[in-house]
Length: 116
Length: 114
Image (cartoon, rainbow over all chains, first blue to last red; front, side, top):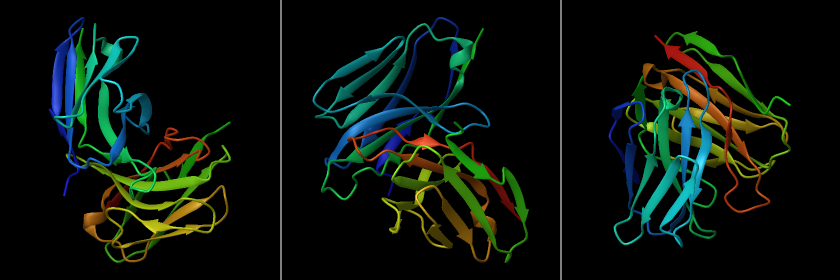
């Protein structure tokens, strides 16, 4: 059972365009939603994260939009650059006492290619 | 400051062979994790250790064992490797003193079982 579903599997965007990656979750006990970025040959690294008490969080060109009622969240990369080409993972974990505390459940991943 | 170090980087095994993947972190983190990464499946949690002396199963523990040797080291053992265990394995650690601290990953071990 995939608790966090991510789409699309791959994405090609022109330089300067907007990249959008979507995730949906099932477990309402999740209360922390990070995005990780992974370059080839490296481990994933935290990019940006959100908690469900806000609907949007922005850090530079990266924005998370969160829709609690729909149980969906998305990553928007504005003015996409070739250096953003990587694999992106959404993830979720639960509140203390939920059984999922500190254990991140990852989505399937999206490979982003930004063309010059 | 190396962060999370995994060895080996690459390994080829024959079906039925055993091996241990090593992981060490130098950030004084309490919690450590083993994930496997497969195309189209994302990262799936195999085992984790919330603190020294404790280990628990994750989503896909079958065929694996773990040892939390001390606070720094967390190893993953395949007793009898199977082709289905061909994957990239990532070790991670996190600080547990604050809520939702980030996972710090190593650079992975690419394992092929023939």
